[in-house]
Figure (tube, rainbow, N blue to C red):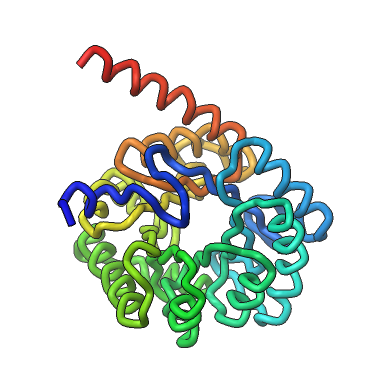
Length: 286
């Protein structure tokens, strides 16, 4: 395969990657750090997912377990009960759904309900059945870097060489997925901003995002409303960090992010339209 195709995959999950994809975040939980459980009721979540689609989301990422720092785990039964009705309704509308879970049973239930993509914050490490399930179902997957669990990850944010260690550990998760039978073209990678990374570490990782392209898979950047955005912007309320989140998302796109996982779908989609138009205009004069 030519090196430019290795470093710049052109398709993933049926999507053309000639532009960054917008992945809208839909937390069907009572304890999300960002939306405070606004969409814990299925009807509200379904309406929100449709609104994201209408605002320009390519994918709606649905999660039924909070992964905020210090969050405690929920059972896969409870998690599935939260997400399945929402996934089924939105999938019937033709919306591309990813399931944000680290539990194989929830993955299976979500895929049965119509989800197309698995997005696992543990990189298929948490549940030993997960990698084989994804391989058997033949679905695309996002592998994220994290150390520990949401409840313990803050204790693991110690690195001698942050960027090199995250790249190496993410490559290990990718290699494990390949060994389980998941094809390379099905895999996207996420450096895991805010997950076992604190403060300035997130900025270092974001500035170095281009180095992850050497792994040869599409990159997902999930920086929306994160604590480090609030620290930079002087904003304690996560719901008021959208402008700063869009700035960071465009920064990530400039460094090769193919998928932007965001809360503010409309704002990000509009910003990307202008970003792309300005880039196209600039190329006319090169």
